[in-house]
Image (cartoon, rainbow, N blue to C red; front, top):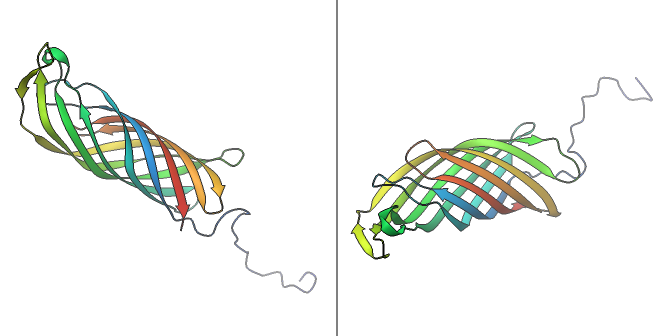
Length: 194
């Protein structure tokens, strides 16, 4: 007993100063991505485009871990090169990706996370075609659709901007396990604690 307090009191658990009790977050992301596709009819040019329809759900797990789930929908086009060197197509992608992220020990008010996970989705290729040396339509190819499974590696750095809001930068590499689309991307993410 010390100063009238029994020595066998249980330890007190409390959040660190500045940490919120709520760790669940929802967010949106704008992403600049470079895509490299594959087509059974021939090579496909690399395409860079802006994705704006990404929705995110994230929450902490035990210790320094959290999950990150992201729903993705995007439309873009692979251009056909003159002379029939590459196949062109309008692409619609939608899917869901999930990852397990680990918090890194960082300085200042930046929280950095590194993670890996899996992406599952559908890629629909419409208006597939080739063009001749003058840029005119040379061949029309049938539409096709594929189910994509891919590995995801990512780095996320977050900064608090308001009591319930964070802004984040995210870099990601997506490697397809099937005949999907390889992607390298950078995102600006807005996250809200709820």
